[in-house]
Amino acid sequence: MKLPLSATILLGFAPYIAFFIGMRAVSVDAGLDAALIVAIANAGRDWLQTRSLKVLEVGNVVLFAALAGFTFAEHWTWSVMQVRLAVDAGLLAVVLASLAIGLPFTMQYARERVPEPVWKTPFFRTVNTHVTWAWAAAFAVLVAMHATVVFVPGMPVWLDIAASPLVLLAAFRFSIWYPAQARKRAGVALQS
Image (cartoon, rainbow, N blue to C red; front, side, top):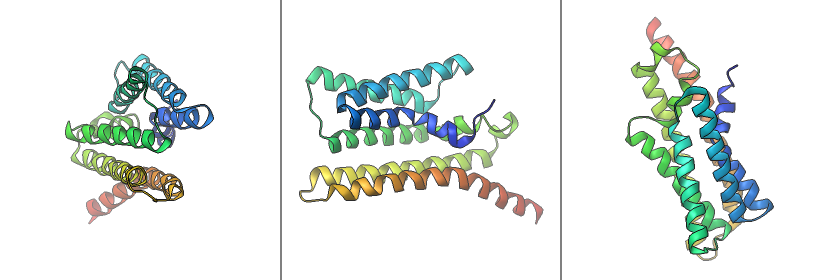
């Protein structure tokens, strides 16, 4: 049974959800550890099911292993905003790396929903590139907001906390809306 696209996108970001819950409920260290465990479980699940790994899953494992390892080795004490900045900067790097290597991270999720002949079409690549850029823009906004709170004295933290879910929701909604709109526009163009 195939999960809906929205569910698979959320599954790809499950380590970040685990990080946030662990960080808020216990500590930053617990959040990093929880995220690493979930990232490894996600990658393992995908490997067992498909014998391949997604760029986002590999990036998640590397990111959370690096952050947890650094925190442990250096006995580093993060503020909430510092660690959010590090995590979102790492996620932005993963998303941009997927674009740089020519494999927008959303493409691997989209391939689970469309027939194989569609995978090589310019339309499929373009749609996934646009959706991946939308996520990159969202993470760039988050990084900028977190950095402002960390490095600009007097910047209200509540503004970052209030805006973060809205930025993520916008990227998530775009991921659902844009492919359908693009298909509709392409269908109209082909009919004319």
